[in-house]
Picture 1 (cartoon, rainbow over the protein chains, first blue to last red):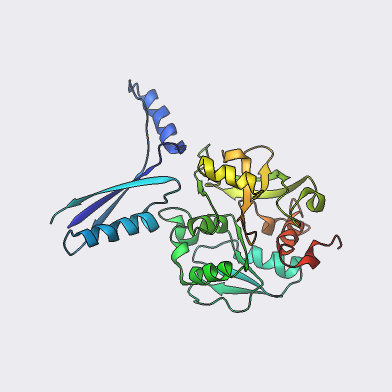
Picture 2 (cartoon, chains in turn red, orange; picture 1 turned 180 degrees about the vertical axis):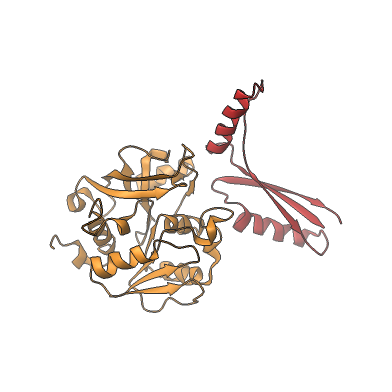
Length: 81
Length: 227
């Protein structure tokens, strides 16, 4: 199966990259923009089944390595093979 | 007295740190490669600056899982003295040995300059009476913007864990924070580089006093005003 992990800066954490890109979008006359946040996409391909144990493992690697809970949130989607 | 300087793939301040303690303070100093599972004899462990593991994913995120970091965790838990400089500070935050995190500079620019830093009162050895009200140290980083939640910041201030603040904030750090210690007072981290401020040809020699003040947290002889 394929897992897409999305890591994004926490809502209350300053995202200077997002702000800079927001300014650039503004200069492209992109109107109505309220916010721009830049995060990461981590694509994993894993053999095995989507079980509760697997999900708890997945949460652990998201918390311990793929994201830093002090500054980032994560979510993932599991795409069956 | 032995100083242990860690080396990760991508460290570039390891030799600067080595020289600060070895030739600057004339202390026996040795390197410890990140693959080592034990630290060996060490009275201070220095986590040096650089770009460990290319700063992939996040600064310090991968280095924190190096075998030697488990030994550093045990060493710190037993009360051992640890000092992270720049990337080393980022690694200690990722490892949970220091609170908070360091993110991209607010300007999005890499900042490389000598900064005036206000010394905070953070302990018997680290305070303005010992170090003076301000020191000058160079910074050299793209991700030195210190972040922590409101409660965490309140705790840092209440416990007097802030070591120094930028007089002119170069990176957007909360409260202008440039360096902190843990609550117990045995783990220190800062973005500025004392390891690049001790030779006569450096822009400042204040790194020597800063390094001494950190050693003095456990070895009072370094707190004495001399040499």
